[in-house]
Length: 187
Length: 85
Image (cartoon, rainbow over all chains, first blue to last red; front, side):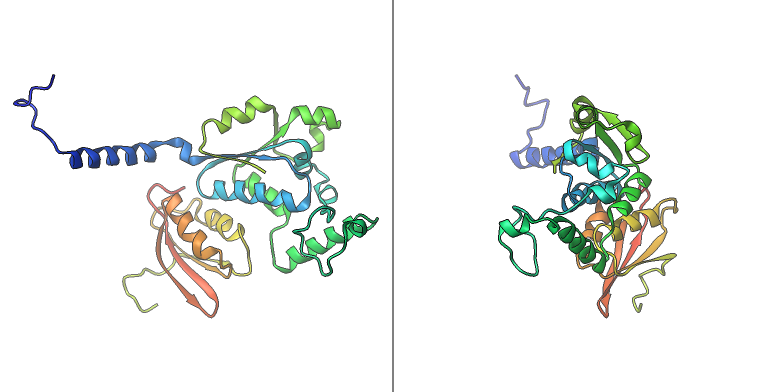
């Protein structure tokens, strides 16, 4: 029971302002706003971009940033990523094509290399960073690149198959990072 | 620059022709190791930089002093904050 003679009453508005200020300060102190964790699960050239762009930007924005590469996403950090990352026009109606082809034709031999070459040319003509450049930027800015150990076993990869600077771990390694960050994205 | 309240740049980063995320990656790199108060002039042609550079500045504790457009080039003047990395 409050003794009103001892503690001067404060109004609702003042309480609200005080609470808002405290919440703002708490958010400023919240380290989780400065941590980002990404899962890269896809192994095509087009889908290699989003996790690398966001993770390097996070690091450039002063965040601790980590990418967990799992399943086909391992292609992105494979030493042979230049050859492994391709674009497949099959079942991808969103892909800009000079001529819209029926799926049966896009499934013909030679279409994957053609689509891959087309996208690489288009990216280069717009001066988009290459995957190699983004990987360099990631390692230079301290983005943690974590390869999923389980998928490595299943796909028959060895640690030496991956670019320098890659760490190896499992779901728990990702989650221990992800649980401490507000930004977690699955790509 | 005519406004005398805007300081001269200590260094210039030419990110013209670069697309997201490279202007930001390179801006962060250009600021790394510089003392607080360092003024960086960033030149960019990526239209995304109009949204990205102010957001990046706010998130990193750097101050966007001014920005202008000259012949399709965006010019940002950024001052390194006390706490910025």
